[in-house]
Length: 197
Image 1 (tube, rainbow, N blue to C red):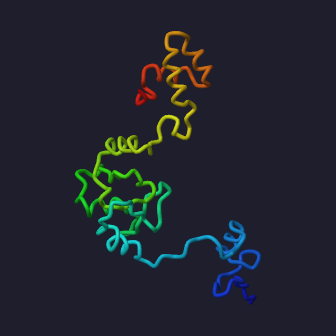
Image 2: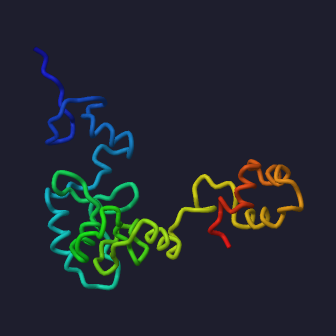
Image 3: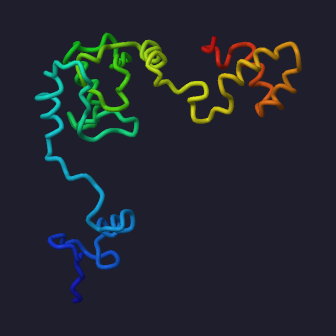
């Protein structure tokens, strides 16, 4: 029986996939050019939850307290709790302000840095989705209008489209701005870009 080759990285002990490396080290070598590069050091099990209760919840400062552990794709801190990942700022908000008034209430950040992982209890409060979205507009962290990744129009374009109402046909305006006639109609009737004064 042939003995399988092991990864050439000392103390790895996993079977070789390619170039003398196991799957994990080979993938790091391809991605970073070094089989030992990439990947943050493992955090001891339970450390994030310990930090949440020992540091974040009792925190009394005015500055943002940024979550130093795993974050979701949206930038919000995540912690493994009760057999699932939970949003760290929501747990802090529960501890600081009690249970949410309804299950649909959101932990809103008055600092505007929730997407950067802020977990300062002083910055968190329960708000409805609409209230949280209004905060995003106030903080400039919203994704509407030209900040939305698929936007074809800018604020000056929309203002110009509104000025042209009644002067030229909607189809001609649509051709000028590279959008559909329906989009122009929606802008004129304020079904789109209604938030723009």
